[in-house]
Image (cartoon, rainbow, N blue to C red; front, top):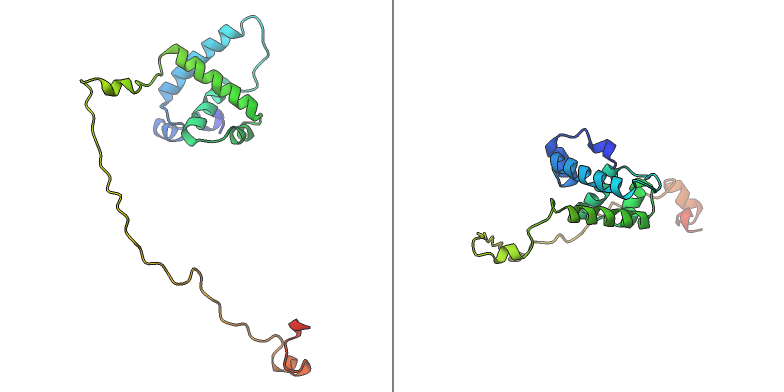
Length: 159
């Protein structure tokens, strides 16, 4: 999905599709633009994808667990370019420090309140149907009674 398709969505729809709010997405784009400008201020080729599309590639990879081949087919690039793009976006966002998750150690903090949810997952048998499909009624003989007399009582399909 390209950025041109999702930029007109409202905040709820945008979050359903991408996994982040519009404000967070825009902050990520600003960080990526600054980093891209620093790397390419003296040299470098023009990019084939916009910064927004690069970020959407990474978000699709994490939210939908799509393969690099599928993402590359959506954007018209090879899977190796998708891999490099996702790695670059990840590294830039991790280095900026604004978009980090708290990690496992936050759970070890004694001030952290942990809520536990128990799910009852006992198995219950369900009755199975005897047939998976209905059997159609037999077909009438082709051509009626006159056809059977010509062929000695056998259907012409067997000749």
